[in-house]
Image 1 (spheres, rainbow, N blue to C red):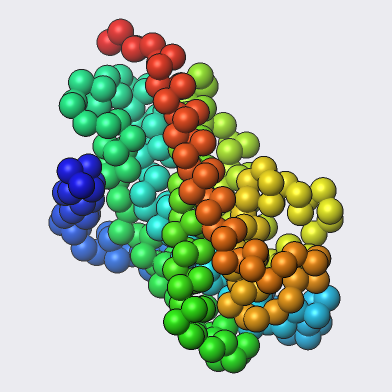
Image 2: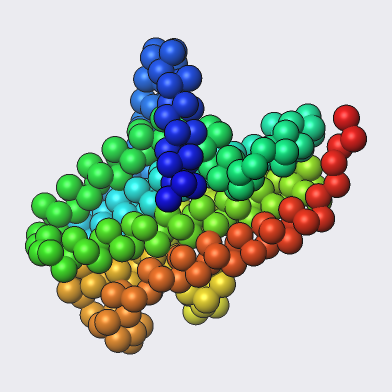
Amino acid sequence: MRSLRLLIRLIAASLSGQARYPASALMLTTGQFLGTGIEVIAVWALFHRFGEVQGWQLGEVALFYGLVNCMFAVADALGRGFDTLGTEFLRTGAFDRLLLRPRPVALQLMGHDFRISRAGRLLQGILVLVFATVQADIAWTPGAVGIALFALAGGAALFLGILVLQGTLSFWTVESLEIANVLTYGGVQAAQYPLALYAQWFRRVLTFIVPLACVAYYPALAILGKPDPLGAPAWTGLVSPLAGFVFLAAAFGVWRFGLRHYASTGS
């Protein structure tokens, strides 16, 4: 509970600092909304051209898109400190100050730079979910709402775990490698479409290695009431978001390993 209160205070301080420049915050938020809006147009153009893709309709895929972008917006806001760990903290020696404070370092990084601009992506995801509801005639029963909230929490945990791993790499590389973006932004792109559209080897990667399918594909099927063309049981989407929390726990395990092997800059 104390850690949660501290995180809220750090986030409030970060938002307060950004609120001092409202025009900048508004432009950055609008930029996030419009920038990712190109992806929405691309999805719409695909289905406008072909009508459906392997039996999947536009409204159904819009549900994937909306869920995944809401997940990533939350994780990206919380994980900004890990994303800039190498350049902003390790290279300058500022990371040593975090170590001296009697609070968990990971918690300090999560509250360090809570970007209000991520609200642009979050708003876009919510609007796409509204579109999906109308287009696919989704019935938001209490069960469906519960599955969606569970999936959003698991997905945010999964993407935050990816950012934690990306930051952990900085202990050895100083700068997080660009290959890490394959798992963050590339993961967002991959999870926006049904798992059945991909090759078998890639489906296994998205299920058992980086379990994006567990937080997006299977819960979306449960919300839609649609059987899995790959043959997974109907109850899979009810429990699969747990994989996101397991992934986050494993990522923090790797983080603690990296933290133990951190050598101060000496500056």
